[in-house]
Amino acid sequence: MRACFAIALAVFLAGCATEPPKNPVPIQAAAYQTEPQGDYATVVVIRDGGYGGSFCYVNFYVDSQLIANFDVSQMITIYVPPGEHIFSIRPVSSFSCGDTSGLMQEIAVNLKNGETKKYRIGFINMVFTIAPTAF
Image 1 (tube, rainbow, N blue to C red):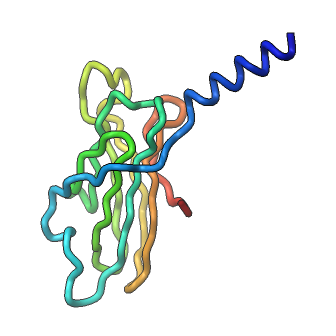
Image 2 (image 1 turned 60 degrees about the vertical axis):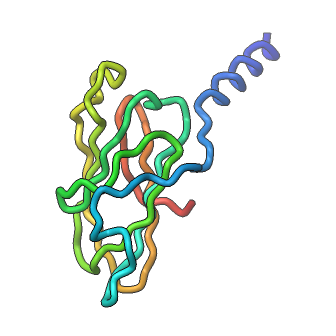
């Protein structure tokens, strides 16, 4: 009985596993695509590649400006002026997103000149999230 439970648990957890991002996301806002001449911080945003939420696209915003539309396992690198900003994500409304469509999540960030920060878009407890990450 324990062996069956262990096998079932392993199969379940494997279905929730994420994979490294493979495809770059087209960036909507041209101002964030190239390294500016003056002060800037580098921001890397990665969307998990697991099964959870995989049928939904997620829009990513900086200070309410649409930057990118993420599919699973995608990432972007953008260049943002130093200072305080609001990063937002919102699932794109569709039948496959169910009750998650339209639910916006936001975090406040304070970027310093020359630093690189990484953020991950995940899907936890039926809600898309954005949080700092080391990976």
